[in-house]
Amino acid sequence: MDFTGFHPYVYYATRYPFSRGQASRNRFCYASSLYLISEGKGNLHTSGRSYEVLPGSLVYMQAGQPHDWMADSQEPMVHVCCYFDWAYMDRRIVSTHPSVICYDQTQLQPSLIGPAFPHFIPEHMRVEKLRTWIDMFEKFYTDNEYTNERTFMRSLKIQSRFQQFIEYFLAFALKEEHIPDPRMYKLLERLEQDLVRGNLQPLAVYYNELHVSRGYFFELFKQATGLPPVQYINQYRINRAKDDLSFTNLSVTEIAEKHGFSSVHYFSKLFRQLSGRSPREFRTAPYEV
Image 1: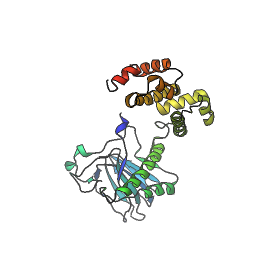
Image 2: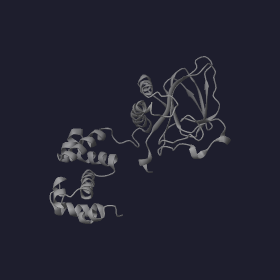
Image 3: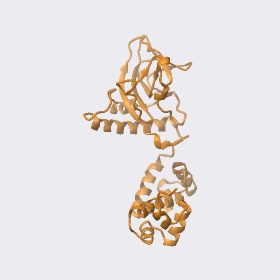
Image 4: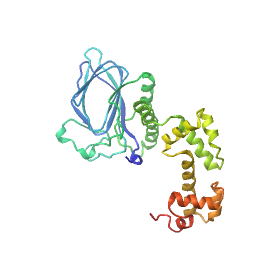
């Protein structure tokens, strides 16, 4: 699965109170949707499954999944909800509003259904800190309208807050199965800053800061990046060296020194090992495959 195409984008986020006994028709949202039950209770029906929903229930519906709601006759539920895609989609051909709901399956246009997330996300969950979740939702409440020149700056802020929320949501929904140890994000930020500044520290400095063993550090690092630490550092340096080979008149020796390689011989050997060409060959034809 190519994750470069994933960039979550929220179209509509709001608070929706149900009336007593209110029912919604079976519906298909073209976008993915999240519903947090903040008050009251009710029932959700989807694809032959039923759930009783109470305060703290968090429901995820992937794009195109049929579902309907029934509010309790005495304590009707309140939804704090949002409609979003894992990658932006323009559906103006079917609606003047970005978040589109279809109530007739025969009218559903499959090509406009948003992308699915590549890992399983439970459709019904329970959250502990209800007020924390409500506060996060409230920060990106937005009307179901397309962004225009007048609303562009506010939309930037809304999307930024939504990105933070989605990070929090995925860490909660996926648990540890597909999410690297959160400590690694800060460490990688520090490591890359040190690389850019030419101030790389011995690996022991980094894993001692995490208070983990060398072996466990290597395990966490590979889980977060897909590479062992030394290979990651070398690849990072080589990629930066490629920019200088392509866009500057620095000599190969100067580039090797600039990026912290012990010698031009070692730089050239590693460059060929990782890219399949020598630095001079790359400089001659940088975009050659």
